[in-house]
Image 1: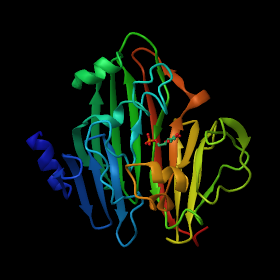
Image 2: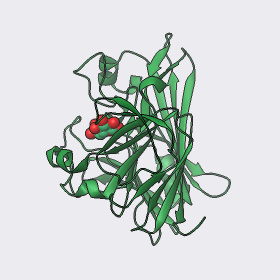
Image 3: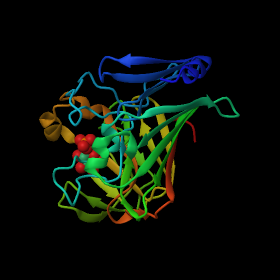
Image 4: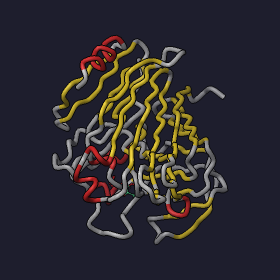
Length: 305
Ligand SMILES: O=P(O)(O)OC[C@H]1O[C@@H](O)[C@H](O)[C@@H](O)[C@@H]1O
């Protein structure tokens, strides 16, 4: 790790610690108004706790398997360059490659308004195994902006001389008080593919609640949705750019029991609202070009208009 980066991190009130769970470094930013953790393994925001509130992101007691492809992925794992199963090769892992490799810390600083800025990077050339699994040169970056809420700006550059087909998601596990009462607003009238019902296309009517047994890809979805949580007394306003889909996922009781990476009751305390480009919203990044996917989460009390 670059000594200069460690100094800059310390100036920001942050530190880097080896994580016992994932045997890989985590960046911890402890500020008066929040505490955040970013795992370099799998390159993702793991936790964001506004002071005096519950974590915005779901945490589990279950440590998951410690093998590369068996590790657990909570927080905001990155699914890239394919979302879901790989349609061409069954041997490749679900949800792409980005969440299975170590990312590098490349920049630490502050935005003009004082928000912390952490930048991490993953390039195909950094890992021979990536090059073996997916022979297209790329560089990914995530810029985390941490302050009143957080935002993630994910960019993917195609460094090859061929167009690159991509489907993707920032697979955010939002922590909720209870999935029976949580509601997702903002998707009324949007068409979705119901993966729990043989991929049938349906139209959303009203709010989504309860947030149970959902595996839905909302196509050409609005940029803003909100997660209302009467138990935690807050709403999270989620705004995205560069993403045409929203994915909602909660495994429900039966599927949760079969999973080795979560406790049986964990499904009650999260719903994934994913900022995505999936299924028919997949797209191509032209040779030499890049694409950005970004989302911001603001927290408000449920009473606020
Ligand atoms: O267990 P994983 O690989 O993290 O995926 C969880 C879920 O992620 C969702 O995005 C998918 O639509 C689901 O089909 C999938 O089961």
